[in-house]
Length: 279
Picture 1 (cartoon, one colour):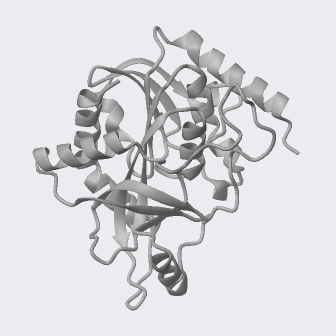
Picture 2 (tube, one colour; picture 1 turned 90 degrees about the horizontal axis):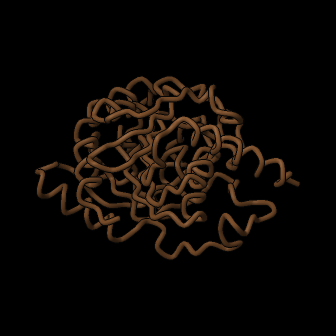
């Protein structure tokens, strides 16, 4: 059984530490995934904290995840950027993975933009496609909301009939068209435990159950954001496309490189979304 009293104290301690370091609370959080850490360059930075400085924060062990919380203003919005994330395959529980989202929720964040790099399952996708997440499938075998519920944080059974805010998805689609950003689509994301990448048979299975892209992250954070009452926009950069009939080795270095190549388009989409979204 999870010791929720201890967990609550840890989250509150982390939130208090962050609150003491900033001049005003953030209204938006952006979590940057594999190969997607450069958005902070466009930000007016108020405070930058290494994850190791924040009480009880997990430590990121994955290449290309810098492990910093950067708070300031981006496109006129008070924004917190999580520069890197944690994964269940690193040995963390889903609750630990989502710890930063829970702490930022206590600071008053109301909108979450969650990004990641994924493998394409939809054969019409190409490397570099930006997928606006319309829905997800959780195959992690874990859920960050397991255990006793803290009613002040959110409902015992959060509704997931529309997990990704329709107005933010519509805005992102409209902006992509107006900005001339090629290969921006909508689709369903499936989260698997990892760290092993998919076999051809697993790829066929994931396609069969309706997934357009596959990754090893984001769903725990999204579930906690929704539980906390945030509206969520999910953006996944398709780094490679898996063809189960013509499979070739998938290398993490190639995934990181492809994500970084698509990053300027993703940044443009995020910045314009922040500038035009309603509070």
